[in-house]
Length: 216
Ligand SMILES: Nc1ncnc2c1ncn2[C@@H]1O[C@H](COP(=O)(O)OP(=O)(O)OP(=O)(O)O)[C@@H](O)[C@H]1O
Ligand SMILES: O=P(O)(O)OC[C@H]1O[C@H](OP(=O)(O)OP(=O)(O)O)[C@H](O)[C@@H]1O
Image 1 (cartoon, rainbow, N blue to C red):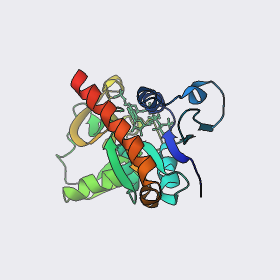
Image 2 (image 1 turned 90 degrees about the vertical axis):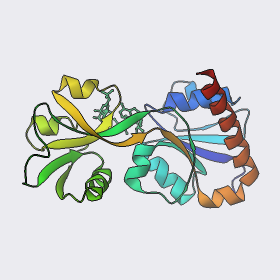
Image 3 (image 1 turned 135 degrees about the horizontal axis):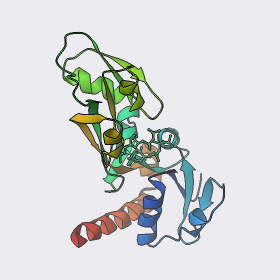
């Protein structure tokens, strides 16, 4: 059995905020901060190994138990489903899923089956299923805003943070789909096997999040 806990961190937008949180709770993250291509780092002052992975893979590693914990966006959790514990809303990486259309277009004003493009087909499917509405979903890998501009789709379901990408591409959000922020997730078996260690980490994070809430 592994002695050290292992956590999968989402590379990219969530990485710096995750490291800031860990530093705030007293973990030395200098190995993660040092430039280089290493994907796995042991922390010098806490029994934790950090693995840097793409968001959907964070969930895969935690579900398979090769990582005990993970930090991943709620967007990825909603898309992939979950068979792990979601223990904390970490309060950063805040954005939302929205349905957006070309400015001036009337998404709901037609009886024809609408086409919706998204990098998140399951989130999109569930959103329209809740409305009892049948839509054709087209999976797009990125720059989803292109789909309505190119007339491939009537609308998109995508992440909106500042709204700049929608605005600069002549699109408008017409409905919120779900709120998104980074979450701490835990493998179900690890939670039992490494209860004390995991509770220590969660407790430290909770205290820091409380401190941040009180500060604002
Ligand atoms: N403006 C935003 N756009 C996309 N994701 C955001 C945004 N703000 C916060 N996030 C969060 O950051 C996570 C990681 O996003 P990031 O763009 O770094 O990786 P990605 O979506 O896998 O993109 P890429 O494939 O370009 O690496 C998302 O899953 C989401 O939870
Ligand atoms: O509301 P905003 O602040 O403009 O942010 C939202 C944009 O950021 C994300 O794209 P990303 O940069 O991850 O590129 P991608 O479209 O290739 O996924 C998201 O898919 C939107 O396009």
